[in-house]
Image (tube, rainbow, N blue to C red):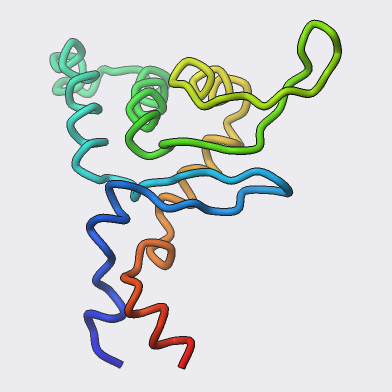
Length: 136
């Protein structure tokens, strides 16, 4: 098999994201970890903390928080299928928003880890030609 088929992901998929099945009835749109948009946002968020970062005096919890914030809108791009009960007790779909994503990240580090696991999975970002050749 050609090297590029194995290791050259689609740049478009890496930045624009792909829909993945997360759980029954829930899909997430995920971009590749470390993509340029994520890097830019993380650098912007780290800027006020540069001195602490250079001195290696930045609290781990702050690094986690900034990484989570940087992931929203750059790695976790969208979702479909999450629901919550409204005031009348009815299940309603939760639209994606940065604020809601951050709320979910704060509720569950497992959710954060799942999102980042998808973002690290090179297989989901491969070129379409690769997928077609595997079918044949």
